[in-house]
Image (cartoon, rainbow, N blue to C red):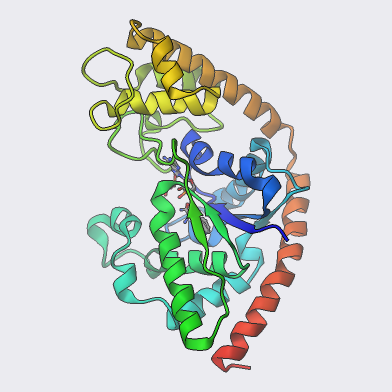
Length: 327
Ligand code: ATP
Ligand code: LTN
């Protein structure tokens, strides 16, 4: 038996090259060696307000993005979280057994997203990491490939599993997060101290996977740079150029030290022009695969995926209901 992977992206905002580099491209590389479940986590998306027609569209969009990125249905299962009721059921049980208020109070994503409105945001936003723990633990997941910002949530899933196992006997496998050595945190093009985020109000801060190609090139040309003019990799002192080097390396299939060598003595202008071409080439291929997919086939894929995982989820839930004493 191969070890198993679980990961997901929320169907909200405009998926960016940050989502691709930090998460989805890792899944593509790993899928041959693992049993993989990739979920479109729609019940995570509704922790902040969504327009219902938009949400329906985004669910199909994210599924197509997984496929266009190279998720292969011969190796992996793609499914929509809300089609498998066990996720929310298990989240409720973890709310009662395993998750503590003190844990959730430490979550940096919640603090960032709630900002000054901590008392008025939805309880769902606060409880979000518990639903994520349920997603992961439901399927005896070994590995959770994510971007750096999600590591804290995977740690919480581990804590919840340990506490539950201590109380009720061995029920859940303890999962592990895997993050890229380079590219686990792609930064905003306008502020290299901030994560590139698909829900950023300013669309110039990110390159979306479905951006118009010419617009994407312009965004690269307009990306902020550091003071100085050398092409060197030093995320602390030169965060902007280091971020652009990371994007170049990941999308262009190059090594950072090699790029630094090749651009010795050359300026930011020339570097950015070349990077814009690398991004354009990547997006062109990606979008060609994306637009070849129809809504109809994608709907079928989601239905088939849910059917497959439902069985696994049902078995685990039967055990869980028994050990806690509701059956
Ligand atoms: P939002 O900003 O709307 O919360 P997001 O861009 O963080 O969204 P998510 O759906 O939360 O997107 O993340 C999906 C996956 O992409 C996660 O594994 C996350 O860690 C990863 N990811 C998101 N942004 C980046 C980034 N800038 N660099 C690397 N990985 C990222
Ligand atoms: N919270 C994650 C999305 C997510 C996830 C998961 C990732 C929900 N459930 C389970 C890995 C495993 C995010 O990227 N915002």
